[in-house]
Image (cartoon, rainbow, N blue to C red):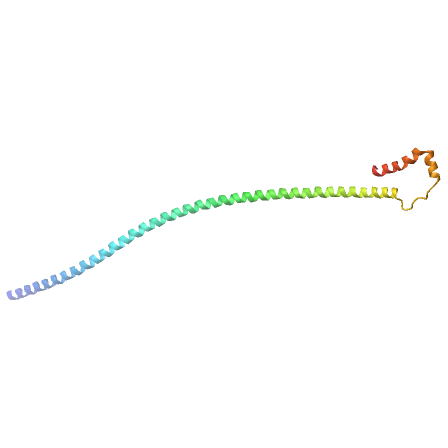
Length: 170
C-alpha cells in the first residue's frame, strides 16, 4: 500500500504540477486580457474626459451664442419699436397733410365759386354797359336833342352817369 500511496502521491504531484503549469498559462492569458482591458478602460476614460471637456466648451459656446442672440433680439426689438413709432409718426403726418390738402382744396373750391360768381356778375354788368353804350338799334338822330341839351345841359350829362353808376355799384 505504501507503493500505492507513493504512486498516488506522485500522480497527485504530477497532476498538481500539470495544474500549476496550466494555471500559470491561464494567469498569463488573464494578465494579458487584464492589461488589454486596462488599456481599453484608460482609452475610454480619456475619451470620456475629452468628450466631457468638449461638451463643457460646447455648452459655454452655446451660452455665449444664446447671450449674443438675446442681445441681437433685444436690439432688433428696439429697432422694430423705433420703426413702428416712425411709421406711426409718418402716418400721422400724412393724415395731417391730407387734412390740410383737403381743407386747401375746399378753400380753393370756395374761392373758385366766389370768383365764378364775381365773373358772372361782372359779365352781366359788362353786358349791361355794352347794351347801354352800344345799343342794338342805333337811335335815330334827333335834332331837337341838341336843343334839349342846350336847354338843360345838366340833365343830359347826369342821366348816363347815373345809369353807369347804377350798373357798376348796384
